[in-house]
Image (cartoon, rainbow, N blue to C red):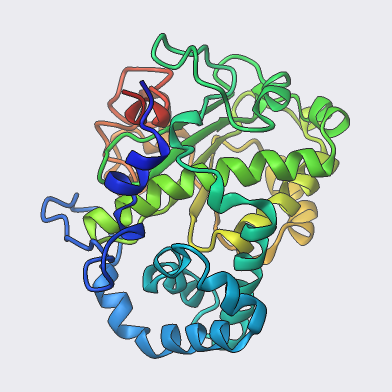
Length: 335
């Protein structure tokens, strides 16, 4: 049996039905990992209280947004923590944060995302067979088409610790970028990315509210099995455009992109690609040493250990976990 929409809003996304004083759900996790640098939500709310209030005022000053903001349970959906992510992404600039928040409110109404319900159990891995638990679960829109171009264990979306963020592992050599560039158009790509981000946001938003720490998604991109001829600029541009939409509608969802096992030609390719990647996404890309250099080196691993403990990090990525592939994040949300 799946956790249905009602149980999601009543037990996992409690802010939808809590009074204002309770809605934040920010109980701080006292057992945080020593490498865990996630800021405390209450501290951020206090620091940015004025900007958050100003963004809300801007929303209420716009007749269309005011109507949508007050529609149904949206006043609980678009609460202080939701607005906080826009303030942080726009570095406290109220005007741009307000514009982004209002565009998102309108977009969610047009796309009927607020009626989508709990999507967390529908996240699936690419190139990884479903477990028995997941076999009868319908995937998110766009998944089946994208998965056609993925080889074994191409993309693993995991939640190694229920109190920390999602970790997504990409093996670039196992993704047919040329096939994706010709077989999946821009709108199909955007739809796939949109629903994947909506589902992941539901996961990290619940963790943020439950642990009291601002929680995000980390992506590890493994370049060890790819070659220059496997890269497709058109696909990467399209992916970049989808990422920009993600940054606009899901601010503070992506923590970072860690590129590992980079070949010698990667720096040249990145210099050509970076200008077409949204600035806010490009700024989150970091290039790490090879796995051989990171293995057992806590200093070299520090940037990864901020998001996943060494015992949960797979051996193939310099961790201690012998299991591969890892269970999908969605398995935690199927009963």
